[in-house]
Length: 516
Image 1 (cartoon, rainbow, N blue to C red):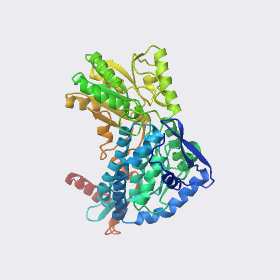
Image 2 (cartoon, rainbow, N blue to C red):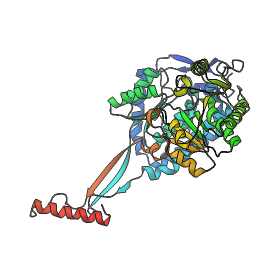
Image 3 (cartoon, helix red, strand yellow):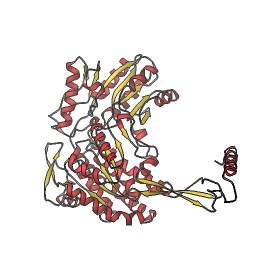
Image 4 (tube, rainbow, N blue to C red):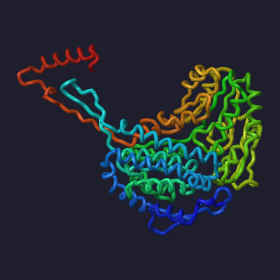
């Protein structure tokens, strides 16, 4: 099932954006049908080095371009994003199998990122006055310099959001970028790259390589001046080690086993409806998706009944319209993992309240949204990330117990607390060990607040996207201190012992006056 938007002319233009010289190709999969989607160039390690060299040649001139001129390109890009949204949605759906509703949600994040940094970059990247060593005598200024060539390695689950949304601030900050998207889901990020060039991005500044993850991705890590990676914790550890050997910084958004806490004062029906979205958006293939729900034991049965009913009403469908609530998993590998987790739990005594089986009648990788209870530590879905449409329900008796259960994981990416008493819910939220926590929502409130940082704790990663750090991480801070008159060393006529007394007295006075 190939979308009408994927014409031969469009595909030829996307292929031309890939740095690949050998003529080798590979074919991606049309997820809804399992057939062939597109044949694309395959890059090599040598191609990745070429991409880096080409990007580096353009980067210094780009960094010297006035910020206002750089930002004008992204304002035009924002318009192109929204104007070409139907094509973008078609490409996202074709290569991921997600519903059109989820594809539209994916389009929104890069648009929000662009508009946020176009507005805030002048202040964030501009010179900042800092307090000098001696007020009135020594001044200090903080400047921001681009890293150079940034490598972005993006995943298959949100290929457009996590490629374009991460590379845009890197470019705004004055860097060049080498992008390595997942091979299965390269079409939508390539289209985003094409739109950036149509908006006026200088030729060669943004390079794309496709191919084997360990080889081509490893070459990106080995050549870049800073790396952004979204993917599994296992791969993230390897990348961090590899980057660390070169003393190159990295930002890593990794896995999660995200909890939701449902307090005893919620409106059960409303909460159950919102929990369905939190668990099954994009068929659960969302790093910040909820996989564990802890429900106060006084409402556990009522919530479970309502949640199962809402889950059973989800519409599964393959199609390029808005008729489906949930689409397909993206690959046979994803389907295998989900099936193994559910089958393991069922075999060891868990209860499947709804779902629990693949749906080959709808498409090769469809799996029903699944709700489990009686899940215990020896079962796969208890602690391991499923990354699919599977959630487990657990009762708790007190807020303290709920916090302890929610924090019982090495991960710390996202969490959620539902409660009618918002002050109480926020108190519980503040005790959860997660980079983002949502009150009365599953994930969108925190993730969509682009002015605030988003990222993980523990095994869920390093660094943050969004907020000030989402832009400034792509820069090196540089401090320029200026001394108006020589005061660091004492004059020749002043004994050093007396000089130290004067300086100590000065430091004491400046502290009392709040000057230093």
